Length: 113
Length: 116
Image 1 (cartoon, rainbow over the protein chains, first blue to last red):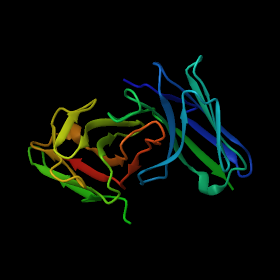
Image 2: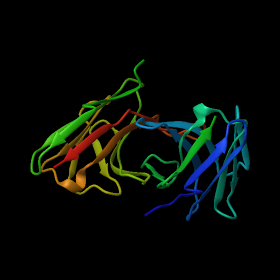
Image 3: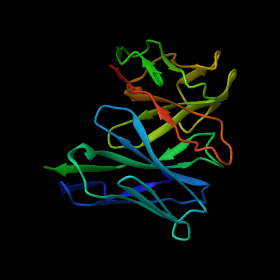
Image 4: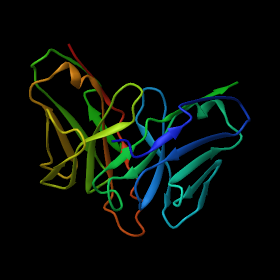
């Protein structure tokens, strides 16, 4: 079953604009992670936010977590063509995630030059 | 430091054939995972291992077997391939968890398998 569900499924914006993707999940979590997948490649870890954190930054990425609403958002500021990719949120099957992650279906982001 | 590598990159099988996918990591990670990704879908966990000699079932284990004889390798086997197993297979690894551990997973480039 899908734990995380991203919204929107697809997003097309102009280079330089900000991109926001959302993720909703169903059960209590220890942490939530965001990954990027370029076409034909494996996933690359972007950022992890723990359940006791509300916001986290990494370069042009900003992730928020609202455990009361069971939702997270990923903001990419000043988008670049190289940001074109699919973005997935992932939550642990249990605990910290030693028994694997559950991924959503992803948001496909296209940055128009 | 190659990270996580997978062989082969592509494979075409006929229904009923068998094959083994190899995953290797050089980061001394305890945990390893096999996922499959189907069009328009997120990744689904097939099997995982939390240490050498141990394996466990994930979300979609039917039709697959795994072995972790060495810490750095995790093998995924298909004994009798079916068209429903046409997919892209990804291996991942992560360090053992702890309070300060990041628990992020490092992924290989994937194996694209087609079963006809």
